Length: 188
Image 1: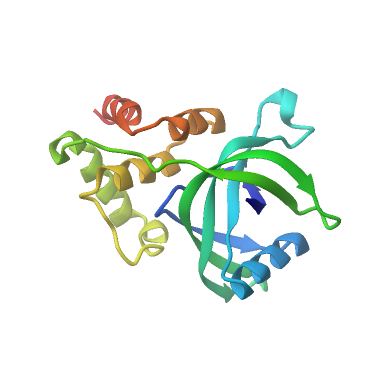
Image 2: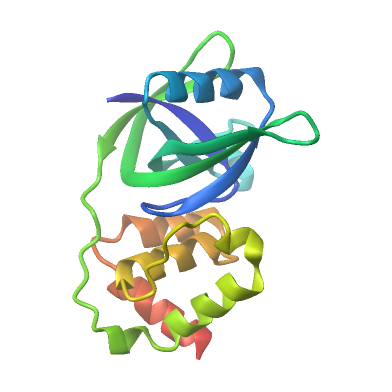
């Protein structure tokens, strides 16, 4: 399926939420279409290695998103809250006349998890602390799922201060075990 692409330096995963400030005409058009047609667009990451900076190369995994709320911000920009639906592999891209990129997207299978809730400790506790400490993060969510290993691990991937390539590597895994090991080492 072909979907509009919204490249960012950060990433969102399924069930994650993100606040966006939209000002470029191509992305205003994308958001209007998504709202009017109850359709989706893909938030993806740009390859920020030196070789790719000039070409603005899109990294291969993104997340299909839906608009869940919008508002006109005090500075006149469009404020949009989006929610991740599912991960996609992005292959061929084309550019429309206004510069909006469209990608051929293939749905990736959802992560599987056989993680016991006890294996989440202290990762789940630390995530709760972040949500309590940063209202700009917690206010995006009407429901939290700290008892769901996949939800907890995917929120950590969104928040981790690691490069785009590392996040892509985590997201491309078939399940959350490798990321859980990484998080356990990092947090302890």
